[in-house]
Structures are given as C-alpha cells and as structure tokens.
Length: 206
Image (cartoon, rainbow, N blue to C red):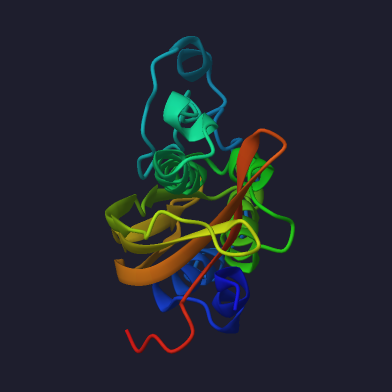
C-alpha cells in the first residue's frame, strides 16, 4: 500500500488545531498593514532590515527561505533537505502571512498544507499578524527509499512555540504550542520535489 494514501486518514492535532486557533483568536477584524509591509509609516518602509513581528507591528522584510542545493536532487538526502525546507516555508508563512512559497511546492490535494496556509492567510487578511508560533523540525526518520508509486516517506517530530495574533487596535488572542509526530510524503517530478501529503499516520496513537 502506498504510504501517501495512508496519511489522509487523520491530521495531527498540533499544527491543524494551531492554525484553526489562529483564525479564531479574539479581537475584531480591523484594517491593518500588509503581512510583510509593516506599519504604514515612512520610518518602517525605509528600514530594509528583517524585523520580527511584535505586539505593535507585523514582521517586515523577512526573506523567503532559499531552496538548498541538496533539495534539488532525487535522492535520499534530497528528500530530507526538501522536507526540512518545507517546514521552513510553513514557519515563514506564520511569520509573514505569505503562503505562496509553501503552496507552490505542495500538491493541490495536500490537505494539511492547504489547511495551515488557508488559516494563516485568513488571519493576515483581516489585518492581524502572528507573533511566535515558530516551527522546528525536532527529528527526521526515513528508510530512504520510495514506494512502488515513487513516493518518498518520512516520520517527523515537529514542535511549535505558543503564539498570539495582534491587530492595529491592540486586540489579540493566543494559542498554545506543543509537539506533533506526523508523516510526510513527497515526490520528485519534473526536476523538483513537491510535498504530496502531511498528516498523522494511520494507526499512530500519539
């Protein structure tokens, strides 16, 4: 049985719940700054330095994580490098509200990919921004071989820090972080990797 089909039975509580909590945090929707543009002031726009989000302003000038050279190869090492890169792209989305890089390298029906990016985008589209929520890939394990459908699979342990969303009127809500054990499946097609699916592996009780 192909691993990527087994992943769609369930989704991990940590990241999925976290992204839903972001969109459901307290505080009314208010017109706010763009995700990466910062407050609408000359001082903010003139400062080119990467600046993390704070309770008073969203992140500014955060660079998109660059694809590692290793992640361009259809190898065991290439898949691991791509998976690590994809987690970095999700972390970048939380920081900035820019979900395009993560969606660009995910399969259209990657349920968890779409859920997280959709909820993050929804938060930022209402003029809010996120402080915290950093994602860290704590561990990675894979047998290093694709299945019969040429789909690669890995077990991941991902942690997420607590986070809060803020708006220009100072209102906000928070969500707790935690740790989740999930599976990741991907394929190398057309000279590049794409995330096929993310989720809790069927039968995993964690």
